[in-house]
Length: 280
Image 1 (cartoon, rainbow, N blue to C red):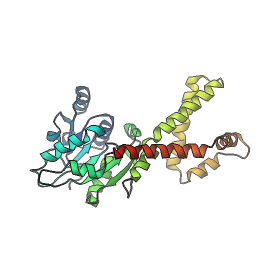
Image 2 (image 1 turned 60 degrees about the horizontal axis):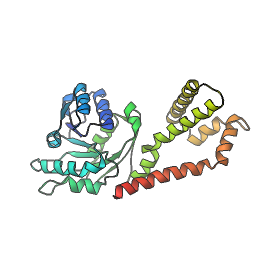
Image 3 (image 1 turned 180 degrees about the vertical axis):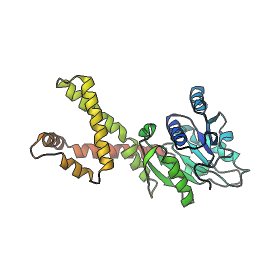
Image 4 (image 1 turned 90 degrees about the vertical axis):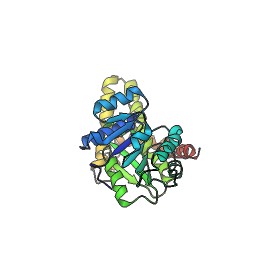
């Protein structure tokens, strides 16, 4: 198995997440000519060609000689794409590692759909990234089929590290639904929080542009403290909460409104919905 720097990497689908990963790979010094993207939309294909990677509209051509194939298409077209790839791999002596970021598509489905005509299956990994990958600050959950080797896992880790600051491997596939409820959907929770902070401050008389700058920087700063501090989130909360002070008053209001249960229900709802989508 070659290193990431020497690997031939194919992307089936050239949307935002694929573009983010490609940008990260190029920034890490991966040879652009080792990256090929199959993308049906002219606009997306032209953007990627401008980066300097190879592009095509032919999935089989993109995956023909690749060491890693990233499935970055919509869930509803994943089956057809995998079947097309599997059929094209029949003449290959060794099969690529398949990395799927298609939401809800199980490993068993990926393996079944991508089998070659002589019955061989590619080693497959499911990944749940999140949208901060677009700015190189992603968090990803991953689950590998039993036949994925330690060397192949390291290759996938290297691939994901181009856009993810945290990649967590779970030991049960259903836990990817929890990852979806936590970090996959999580950015929207923080966006909503900032949205409401801005609205509250604006209602109290602060100009919207000032409220937005203060709220967004507060979110960024708090996030950086969470990442860089050795303290638990609960301790960081206590550190900024003086007895009977302003922060204490706000947190008491949260508690009175059942904040813990609100968050718990939100994560559970997203997790359940992820499981439902995967069962279809």
